[in-house]
Length: 99
Image 1 (cartoon, rainbow, N blue to C red):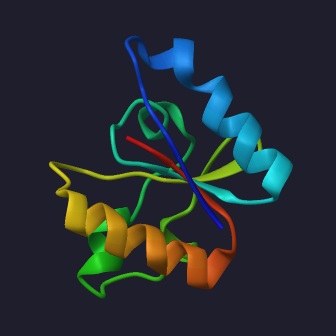
Image 2: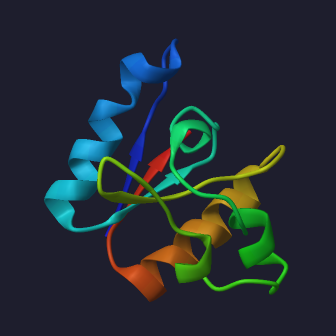
């Protein structure tokens, strides 16, 4: 299952919504905006590493408020976002796409 959520303005003003949805679905947030992932705990591979085959989806997980978040380290095209969301969906189940 994939759910797309818009951002509006302000990083932390909109962070609770995708986090709450992902938690309710026992899913993952794909942060194509950097609004949530920037404050997620941990360092390491991100979505760009997953697309390039340098990391698995699980290796790219970071946690914010107990919810797995996959961030993106640079510009993300619509195609890249769709491909990455599909990979997360296949490997981790539900995905909430913020972007």
